[in-house]
Length: 488
Image (cartoon, rainbow, N blue to C red; front, side):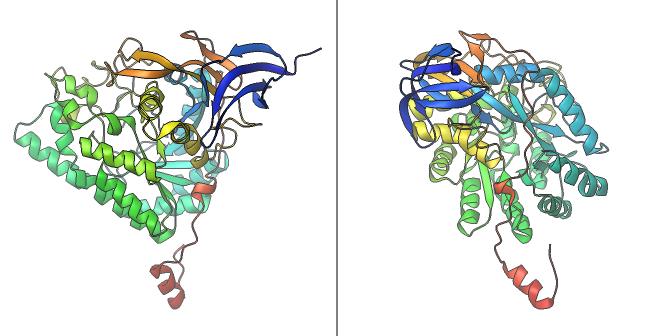
C-alpha cells in the first residue's frame, strides 16, 4: 500500500500566528495535506519531538544580486543569498528588480528574473524599483508587469541617482492605483541629508560614525508625512520601508488612526543596533552603515511598542550585502568618507534567529507574534497568503523546525552569504532552525544545504487586498465633486 504522505513531521509543537498545538504534519505533493494526532506513516519521517514546527519565514525586503545606482554590485548571488535565507529559516524572499535612469523597466525585470531562475534556492518574488518614471515606464511597462505578477513598486525619496520628486511621486502613485499595485517607499528627506552631509564633510567629520548624524531623525518623519499626504490625495495604499525612529512610527500611527491605508515595517538593525555601533576604529564602522542609520535605545523601545500595537506590521531584513573590501564598502579606498561608503547590511540569515531569541526565548511579544511578524503578515500584505506564511491544509509545506534550546553565538564565519561579516557577530542567541523544508523538500538539515540552485520558484502575485484603495472621501474629493472635477 502506498504511504498516504510523502513526509510526516511527527510529534512537534505546531505554531501559527494565532494558535499552537501538538500535532503531526503530513505533506503530500509539496503541500500540507494533514494535521492531527497519529497521522499515517509517510515515506519520510521527521521526528520533531521537543521542537517547534513553524511556518517558513517570508522576508519581504531583500537586495540580491543588485547593482546600485553608484555602479556597485552587492556581494550576493541569488544562490548565495537564498542559501543563507534557508539556513536562517526563511523560505520565501521578495527581492528587487532595480531600474536606473535610462533603463527600460521591462528589460530590468526580465534580467533579474533570469538571475533568480538560475540561482534561487527558496521561492521568490520581486518589487519593481522605479528610478526613471517615463511615460513608457508608467503607461506601458507598469500595467503589463503588474498583470504578469509583479504587484509592488518601490521608490526612493532620497539618493542623488534614485530620488523621486513630489510631482513624479504622484505620477507613480496614480499609475500604481490604476494597475492595482502597492507602492513601497524609502522615505527620507533628501535635502536635509545632503545639507547635513556637506556640513559634516566641510568640518572634517568624515569617519563612518558620522553617517548616523548625516541622516537627521527629522528627515524620516518629514518624508513619511509628505508621502502619506500624497498617497491620501489619491487614495493609494503605501508601505513605508524600514522605519527607524520613534517619530516615524508615531507619524504612521497618526495616519492609520485617521483611516489612511498605510502599512509600515522595521528591521533588526533598528531593534538591536544603535548609532554607537558605527563608532569603530578606522573605517570599520562602515560595516554598520545603512540608511536610515541605527538610532538610539529609546527608538528601539518605541519600535517594539509600535510592533506590539500593530502600527508596524512586519520585520524584514533589508538584506543589502556589501563586502568590506574594494568590491563593496571600500570601493573608494581603505579610508573612505562616510559619503563614499555603500549603504547596507547583510541580515537575511540572522533575521529570524535574532527575533526568535528576543520574542520567544526572552518573552518579548511571544511566539504567535513572532510567527505573525516574520511570516504570516508579510505573506498577507504582499498577496502570498494562504499559499505562504502559515501552517494550514493546502498551504505550501514551507516549514522551519526550531530547537528552542539550541544556543548559538553568531560569528562572521558561520554566515552563508558572501558578505564576509555580520553586524550581529558576538551575540548569543537561544533558538535555531535545525531543519528547513521548502514545498515539502528538506533544504537544510544537520547544518547542510540539500537543495539545488534554481530549485526555487517564482511567485507571481498582484497587489492584492493591501493595494486596494480605502474608498475614504477626503476634503479634496468633496471639493472636486462640488466643482465637477475628477482627481483620479
